[in-house]
Amino acid sequence: EREPNFFHAAATQGENQVVVARQNGEVVGTACRSWREVYLNGQPTRLGYLSGLRLQESARNRTGLANGYAFIKQLHGDGKVPGYLSTVIESNDHARRLLTSGRAGLPAYHDLGRFFTFAVPLDRSWPTTNRHEDLTVESATRMNFEEVIQFLNEQGCRRQFFPVLRADDFDQPCWRGLAPEHFLVGRNSDGRIAGVIGGWDQSTFK
Image (cartoon, rainbow, N blue to C red; front, top):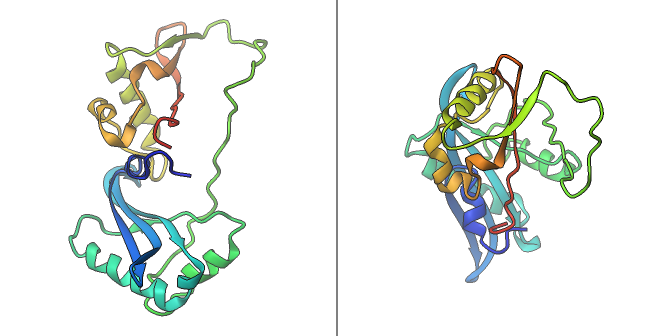
């Protein structure tokens, strides 16, 4: 679901190229090649992400898929990134088997494990018990956002593929609609940041 703007939604994955497959003049498939700076083994590294693979039934064969990946391989020749990540929903066994088959010129995929995404409903009241008395929560501002970014990078570099963050990134398409005031900051009694959470409303473009 990429309404109302497919390209604005795709831009949240970083700089990107959208690949389109046509059959008899009709669009029968799409894919995205994206890249951004992430932490890899604790170091900032520009890494690619292949996503958004969608094929009509008539194009769901190894030949069509191989042609698409051959074109992406040509794009890869620009040397922007050394390699790519992809994610496949766990229940989509067909896509996982096909992509990891290594047949018909498909790239070599290596399983890096399971990735969990937590869904938090924001349209309901939450319990207010068990609050930490020595913890205060405040909204981030433009004035203290560099401190927030520094905290996120310090924590993020310990995790594989966490995005490298800079304050001016939040005026760019990859973080469209997300601003400092959309973050909450928890501080210990000594004023140090204990935690950060942001609420990103993407409904204006996705």
